Length: 107
Image 1: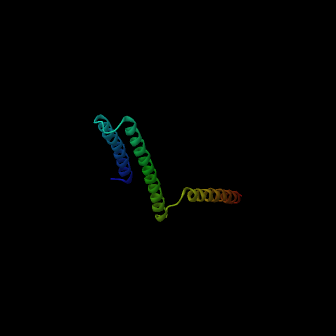
Image 2: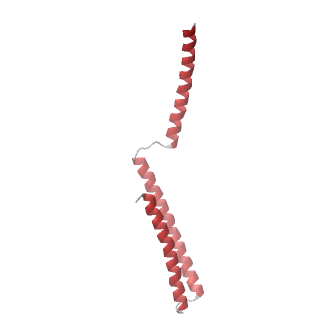
Image 3: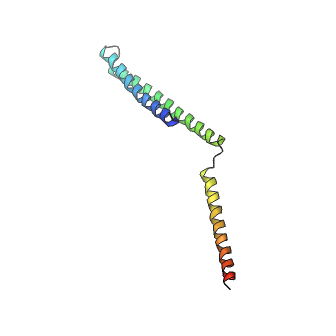
């Protein structure tokens, strides 16, 4: 199971939990233990807390991935662009040198 599969399952579980909470609150309303407005308020509070937790989880995962990539010592896009720029520059210089060399050989 990949890292992204774990995240996907966690998100889907979160959606399932939201449905479960909603059904639970509906049952309490049907039993008369909660009013509609109390149920809505509780659901809103739970949703806000769940969203904050989700945001925090996302932030932590992002930080973990960033740290892991740094530890792997992989080149960044900027690093690759610098190498490509230098390669283009060297290719141009080589082309010019070959052109000069080719002209003197033709004579």
